[in-house]
Length: 390
Image 1 (tube, rainbow, N blue to C red):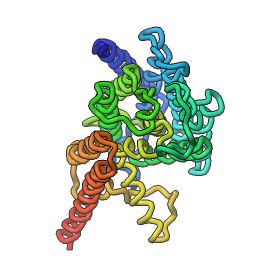
Image 2 (cartoon, one colour; image 1 turned 180 degrees about the vertical axis):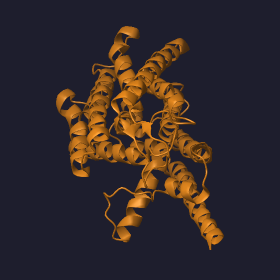
Image 3 (spheres, one colour; image 1 turned 90 degrees about the horizontal axis):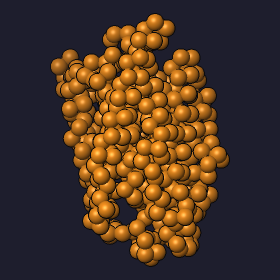
Image 4 (cartoon, rainbow, N blue to C red; image 1 turned 180 degrees about the horizontal axis):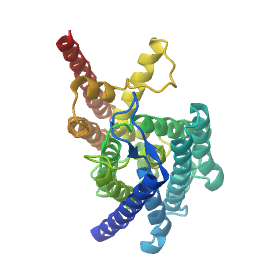
């Protein structure tokens, strides 16, 4: 039975209205409490601006997630409540990430303390709820009514899944935080990823994609791919949409660490949930996130080769270098980025269309070429600027 569109629309509206209301209120409070981000040599903005907008995203998402079972019951497809597991996980990482972000925005804590906080945020859900980390492969085996032999069909052992999951949540939360430096960039980036994840889930439900070998063997649809999975994408999308008018094209507030850390952690958790302990699927679901992963990874390698301190703040990420080289507005930079977001997102559909390795290699090559073209365009812009200044 197709999912009633009204339920998704209502969830988007609930989260959107809540996010817009809380963000507006947070801006008023920030102005009075002097919670302002002042421009410095590393900033991409030139006007003192409140940096509390992320609180609106987080509180709206938390409230909607909390009341979700009362609004629309979560119909579990097996003996294990996977949707409830995802709901609790998202609430945990959003609340923890928001708290850590508020503390960092206010007190500017050290990189080591911040990293420790992110590890706690990634580990606590596993300890408290037995959530998607090492538990997911076991839960999925039970929900699908079969037994999984660890190490087969791309399924990692539970301990390795736990380790990979914690590192992935911490790493991508940091990457998302690093990349949140231009008006609207992280909001539209997250919306793009959620859109493509939604398309993959819908296509799987419609039988458009070939099943993975594991689930063909078990004779079941992957339990994480249910109609209700879309609820969580709708809630996060609505919360982001409520915030964006205050951040783009002209920023009345910033997402800040209070928004970027939990939003990055939420996207990481969603990829883990959808991949279900399968490293191949995790790679596929990382493709819409590859622009951020590549930019941060490339910059870290570049700075490391030059012997620079990797934890020192800077303006050397590719998007910052492009902004400096071209002198573009934030809106124009975002328009330039959008085709790359769409290409890397669409490559996810190619990746999951067929389980043959040549098909998946082709999807990876599409993403790789897009990232290389982006990198070369940044270098070309810098070369043109240097020639003009010479």
